Length: 341
Ligand code: DOR
Ligand code: ZN
Image 1 (tube, rainbow, N blue to C red):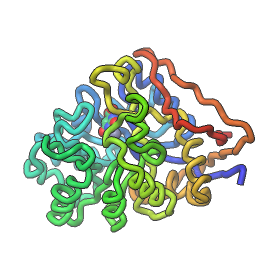
Image 2: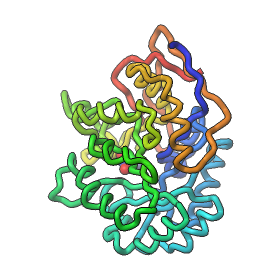
Image 3: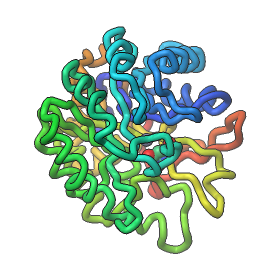
C-alpha cells in the first residue's frame, strides 16, 4: 500500500503550553489533527473551569479551527462542584491526576488520594474520565519500575474502590501497562508515538540523548514491542495520545534536562511508518481516529487525512522556531517515506 486515507485523527494527550510557545506549537498539531485532549500542567496549572475556559480561548486564537478538549489539573483542594459544572457545560472532558513530583509542573499535584475521593466519586457519578500519570514517586522505587508499581499499588486499588470511574492510563510504557489496560470497558490507555519507536538504549547508548528523555522514561525493548502489538491490534482500549511536550533546546540540552519529546510535527508520518512496518496500516485509523473518540463519547471526525508513501525519504524540519527559542522535532533515527498529502 502506498497511500492511505483515514478519518482526521485526534491526539488524546497533548501539551500546548502557553504564550509564545503555544503560538508556535498549536499550528503544528492543527495541521494534521482535528482535536486534542489538552494537558493542564501550565505554570500555574489549569485548576478551575474558569481557567480552562480562558486557556481554551488562547488556544483557539493560536490555532483557529482546531478543537481543544480541555482538562483540569487535579489538586487536593479541587472543588467537585466546579468540576461537575465545567463538565456539564461541555468545556471539560477529563481531569488529570499528577502524583506530586512525578513530572513537569506536577508539584501542585496529588500527594494523598484520600483527599481527592469526593472529586473522583463525583466524576464516577457523571462519567467524567480521570487521566492518570501512572507513576509512583516513592524515592525507593526504581524509575524503570514506577509504572508497574503504580498499577499494583495505586491504580488497581483505586478502581476497586470506585469501579464506575472511567480511567485513561496515559502514555503507557510497559507490558504491564498493556496487559492491565486490556480489560477495556471503562479503562483505556494512550500510547505515544515516541514510545513505539525508542527504547531506553536510544537515550543512553553512545552518549546521552536528551531529546529522547521523557516521562515515563522509555523502557526495555520487550516493552516497546508490547506497545507496538497493542497499538497496532485495533483493540478499542488503546489509542493515540502523543504526549508531544515541547521544551526549548536550552532546557533539554542542560545538566538537569526537562522531560518531553516534541512529536507534533511528524507524528502521523511516523505512525504510518510504524503501522506499515507491522503490516497494520488498516488499523491506523482505529488507533488515531476511532478508539479515542469512542472512549470520550465523541463522534469520529468526518474530514479525512491522506498519507502517501514516497520512494525517496521525506525530510522534516529538525527544529521549529518559537518566540521562546528553538524546539527540536523528534528524530526517529530512521528514514521515513510517508508524508501527509
Ligand atoms: O515527558 C513528559 N513531558 N512527560 C510528562 O509527563 C510531562 C511532559 C511535559 O509537560 O513536559
Ligand atoms: Zn503529558
